[in-house]
Length: 316
Ligand code: NDP
Image 1 (cartoon, protein in one colour):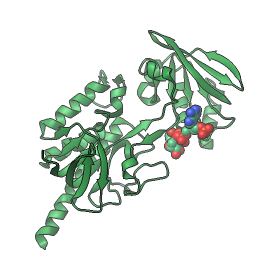
Image 2: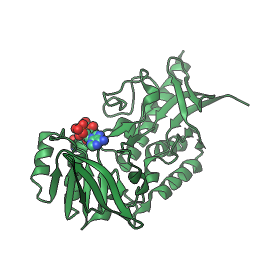
Image 3: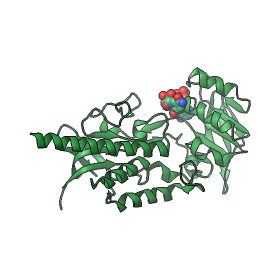
């Protein structure tokens, strides 16, 4: 078995950022190789309908969109491999990447599109009602709950922003805050507190999400030892995301939350030839369209890097 593979452009991650990078790199004749990671298709495969991606007037099913993106990337010559990158070595060039703890890939450039994972509370009912009332993205799924009553859990900027967003679509938003204060910025808290159809439940923990075969119909919470059931049709998590950057710790610059740092207006990380695109380097926007946009930037940055490198070699 050949245990080492040499590639010009290696992409890790198979969400909209990774596949868009692949489409651009493939069309530039760079025959990229993409490793899907542990969740082929990324976060969008956990969503039903995507209605905010431009170009789909009737919306598109999340998993179908990812199948289409994969086909489009393959059509131009991307090699898509199923595998998880388990280690990287940036002290050598070509960059050394280990897949599934055994396969070595030597890459002239690397585009990281490993994304971020929404945090969940860890309740079995969350998993049970995933896509049937439980969501970790109000901008993606809020529209399906218009005219309904929903709950949001969290107390940071995301929770404040998502509650405000949902308050424009839903009859009522119950914001479940585990402490007696929010950590969201003052201006965003002010907005939440001044929105008449947002009710804040302070010192409140979620105990269970309740429902039946048609989906969520209530949430059971506990406030200062007292249990209560709040009828809601949607339950939104806004307790933060975790960027998938564990394997890059100590190897790439990241912020305190673990998001990869890139040079302003580019996808360049602090290591030459390594680019970061999509949610892994974006703690603010985290949308499929912004991920796709930076995926395109990553491919163009990698292409430029490779051609400069080639010119350098020729000049020697
Ligand atoms: P944060 O980490 O800032 O906040 C997470 C919130 O979730 C905290 O209030 C925390 O509560 C709460 N939480 C965590 N675990 C649980 C749990 N098990 N049960 C109940 N509540 C829980 O994450 P955000 O996603 O809000 O923000 C991430 C970053 O992105 C921040 O830097 C933020 O400023 C930024 N951001 C900026 C926006 C903007 O400027 N428009 C919009 C969205 C995000 P506790 O406070 O008790 O720890």
